[in-house]
Length: 187
Image (cartoon, rainbow, N blue to C red):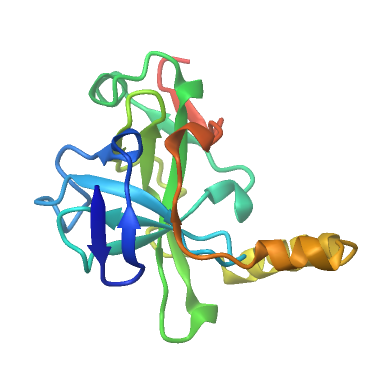
């Protein structure tokens, strides 16, 4: 299907790349069909693009990039809702708030998005752990991570660098590795 978006223009979304979020995202319960978009830059942020509202695109980031000890503990009910019989079939993303001053960017560690990679189902879960906040400052860690990647690429040939320039594209669910941050409360 062809989807016209406000941020990325026209995108072709395969049926296999649709993600269903029953109940939507907090604040947007009416939108339940999404896809993940790679904006084509090297910032590591991906976007959860609504297929029902072209203006709704939510920035996401894998939390292990800036908080290596992050763990998501799911209840039995949440595991059932996500049809997760194996927590290693899931990916976890934090929802970002990107301020006008990008250095004030924060991640919502309290309510991450968990995706069942096999079933293409997702849910924004509200974690019970008090150690996590909804506005975790993380720009410094992201910048450090990006600088490490950039320094590793400096040895690349010019053709490799030219090949990196690309347009926005849909992220195929099959290419997303499991996060290994999800734990069952029973474990």
